[in-house]
Image 1 (cartoon, rainbow, N blue to C red):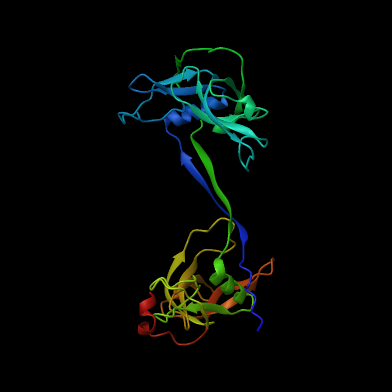
Image 2 (image 1 turned 60 degrees about the horizontal axis):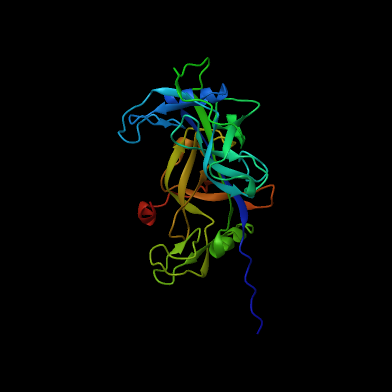
Length: 322
């Protein structure tokens, strides 16, 4: 007897990103504004050390520190690691060394990139200097990288008032994670079923509950689930929230409703948008059905759920799923 081929498990590139906007205190504001002006500032700690990059609180005493000093744009490599394959957003697009550099006049090291031909051209103790970016905006990227330097130590730290014209008061940090996501065997079957406008879950062999979307194992009993069960397409709103803040790049006008929906035959509520009814008329127990959408890539999924016109479900029929 021929065996049934195992369906291919889905995989796709996924990007998670969030632009984090933060304000700057007086020390960080002076440091980043100084970089824009080709000036490197550190801060004096209570024990007399000059800290670069500067911090706003003493790492030993936790007291606030504000005594800014200017240090040199030259320094010494304290340690390094070779980066043979630069990634998106890194300082250089050719192989380079990550280095910790103790700038002349500083007592701590600054992490950045060193532009050298190869790993044989970098060593601890080598002298380097800052290569400034052609266009500077008040960010750590105003230091394009470090480069080899033959000179000796240039200066001792000198006091600086931290005052600059048009100081930088805030930054946007682009947090981003690129990876390949695989939903696994159970959710691959779930996604493939959606292409046929069907919703498929899996039943636990122990407690007999049906989970949608399936996870491949029962979250209650901890045993594997393999028995597939088609549920819905209709369901019941168990709880909901009204969204009043418009999300970036989401073409949905506010306010709108996002709800937990217990599909008929399922023992776990999934979440989806409710439309086709004024937002202030959505309620617990509302009976709904999917409105399917086809994306440009050919994927098919419920775009939202709308009322079926049936009487509301009795609370006792879905109270365990609230």
